[in-house]
Amino acid sequence: KRDSGTAACWGDWGTGGLCSDVDFHGTTEIYSSDGAFVAFKKDLGTAACWGSWSSGGNCLGVDFSGTTEIFSSDGAFVAFKRDSGTAACWGDWGTGGLCSDVDFHGTTEIYSSDGAFVAFKKDLGTAACWGSWSSGGNCLGVDFSGTTEIFSSDGAFVAFKRDSGTA
Image (cartoon, rainbow, N blue to C red; front, top):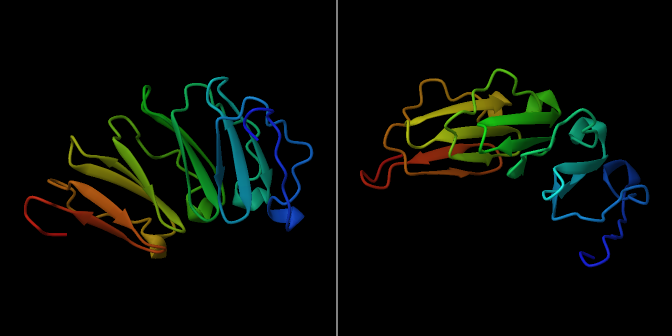
């Protein structure tokens, strides 16, 4: 309930079904992975995470100040700060919870599959991919120049070049 800052959670406690300790007051958006949730307070620059720690249910130490968008895979989250070109990732490293080597400067969009992320720099025609290689986390050798849109399925991505009609 946005007005009162309360919420009801139910289901498997280990994957987010128990949220009685979560303070929802000021929450502007809620995001989910397969086993965790994030209650984001954009105006305050804070968030609360709960559920399975291996799916992103533990975001202690993540600085949400300046975060403009949050993205999720099955087991990880990305808090993207568009203005500064930085991001924080947490959750399962194998599904994108580790992004310390990714340069987010110039990123125009972030996309996710079930186990990977793509930070797309449309203006530069480049992208960085991380997470599970079998879910699209390895895009070495992909030519993103001229790409207008990226689409995702559970385990793959398509870089579409609208003007040329190619992918």
